[in-house]
Amino acid sequence: MSEQTAARATKTVEDTRITLAQVMMPKDANFQGTIHGGVIMKLIDEAAGVSAYRFCRRRVVTAHIDQIDFHHPVQIGSLVTIKASVNFAGRTSVEIGVRVESEDLTTGETAHTNSAYLVFVALGADGRPAPVPVLIAETDEERRRWREAQARRERRPRAGS
Image (tube, rainbow, N blue to C red):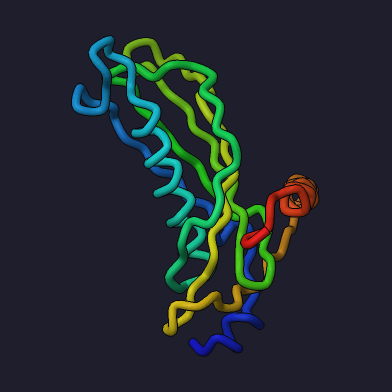
C-alpha cells in the first residue's frame, strides 16, 4: 500500500481493538510477590503498539506516554488483561487508549489496575513520519473518546519545544 493510499484509507475503532492476557509469574514480581510496575508498563506499550500497527499497517514507534497511575497491586498468579484501541488519529500519529485489569483466578475478583494513553507515530520506508488512515468513530462513546483525545493532544508538549 502506498503512503498516499494509506492516508486515504479509513478504519473504524473496532478494527483496532485488541485484548492481550497474561498470567503473572514469579519472574515478573519483586521479593514481596507484587508484580513490577515496569512489567505492566511493558505490556501496556506492547498492547498499544499492536493496536497502532493494526490501524496503520506499517511500522510505528512510541512517541509519548501520558501519566500511568497504579490503582491496585497485581500479585503473582493473577491474570492481567490489557485492552487497547485507537482513540484518535492525526496526520502521522495515533493515540491509543489502554485499560489494564487484574483477575484473581481463585476468587474471580477483578480490579482495574491501570489506564494509559500512548501516542505512536507511523513510519514510512525511509524512517520518517508517514500518513495514517482516517479513523471513523461510530458510537457516542467513540466520539467522546475522540474529543477527549483531541483535547489531550492540544495539551501535550510538542517535539522540539
